[in-house]
Image (cartoon, rainbow, N blue to C red; front, side, top):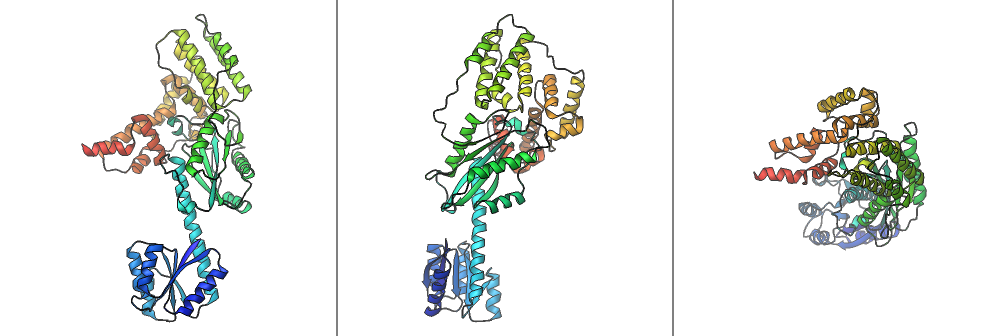
Length: 506
């Protein structure tokens, strides 16, 4: 609803304009009528209407002086000049004040219609922009207030979360984004908006393998959201259908409900994804409560791990890992359950070896693998490291290629490096190179890039305490300041801004 104030010292014109708007334009509401600029100024400051029709020549205070006072109070009110004058001086001052709409007396209905429709479109555009900014902040931050702002009144907001590959639990997986996960184009989103009565806002997720589509619609509408979510997943899958088979998408539809805020809905969705996102296969689910979810290790997994003994050699472990991976793949389990099962296996291996070692981060291992085959290789690598076995990673080219990759990363870590970069430069896919690199240096390429970038970022900030965080992010190779801040805080225990603040004190 757009609130309108009329400031006019001729009662007949004021009443006539009020009646025209009230009878013919349901999206506009007359908030009041004032007879002079002084009263009008008080009402504008009190009511803050979006649209004001004002005469120029009025007693006490004229319309142009009133507009000037309103602007001094930093209100973004849209003004329409009501005048019977074709006076150049009035027009010049009005233009200087930013007023471009005129309605000549007697009132021309076509001009009035054009002005009101233009105002309505402007409000829709501004509201949509405010909504997108708010929703983007809501997705990336847990610090927003519980209630939704005024510009969400009259609207419901549902979400389609699309996760490509595993759910990220580690920031290091964000260093090398997958170039195959492309968002839907503005043209396709426009087509979907024509088909469904919704506004669609494409948002950044909390990690680079996430896309979030916010669906905003009038509270009175009931669009077929499940159909829309299915179509979004289908279109995204079609974007990658010519790519390798390890692309899989978990799509979650989070429906708006009365009494729940946008921030509540987003938190619930991420929690639901944690418990329900499948590993290794695509799915589409509707978000629901997860308050009573329990993760239990299956008897089959326990029986497999019970076979570990002091006499177990490398071949025995490899056979056990293969059986475990085959079992998990066949059950089509959630990533959370898979992580719990593999953590149980790793714990059993460490206890059998009776060695005092740091437990590997199983959640990170799972979240950086895009297939069960890759996960099997990672488990073999971790088992070899725990038990002290010599790695069976094939290929005499391992040390040479791994060093080539490291030299390339040392020279180019500030550039944008994607999964496709490795294929183009070295002729091998990123997964294979990652295995070789980790076997040689004990660290993944992604984590190695992060450490190079963070080292450079700290040097930049130490030497330039007044530098902007977004400039640091760009200079060291991060495409997004948000991701840079997430990686930095995870590694250093403080945000970049806190780090800079410490150096400013020194």
